[in-house]
Length: 212
Ligand code: DC
Image (cartoon, rainbow, N blue to C red; front, side, top):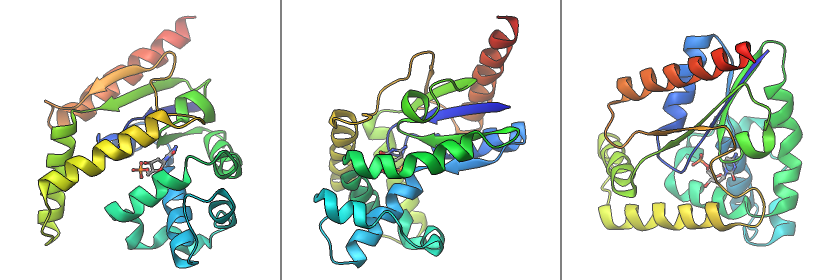
């Protein structure tokens, strides 16, 4: 069984890298941010307050079909997800699902904020993907333009900074580089170069474990 943990801040490229690794190693992949996004969107739909733990916890038994809702991908829902994710009971209620996915026969790749630290601390390989705030905002900007949006660079930068601050300073499972994780800064890398680098790092970690 091979478990690969990919963590990192918003818009770092971790999702793209996790999916490419999944393809390369033939493993299933779970974007754990989607679970928090589903909770965030459910709270909104129920008219609840994402900052109230009871409201957020009540939204954790969201309908499975919600995971296919394209609205989950919006920046607004990302911010709601970040707000509900500070509550310990919310995190707790999503742990089993993530661990079951990680430990399925053959293993899996998961990407998120706390995969290498909390969900799968014994993962066979761990990568922490990052990029400068400016580059991450630039990627969001190009993405929004490509989808016909009218993005504002300053508000994108402010949103990313706010999300980083909340995700890194929360009391429970804050975003940080896990013990044993390799850092992958994608600021100056093309998507293809970042993927090749990620594969090289994972190969080296898997090889290292085989020798121990
Ligand atoms: O990866 P993402 O942008 O889709 O995540 C949305 C939010 O969900 C993120 O800002 C914090 C939260 N999250 C988390 O706390 N732990 C995870 N493993 C994944 C996401």
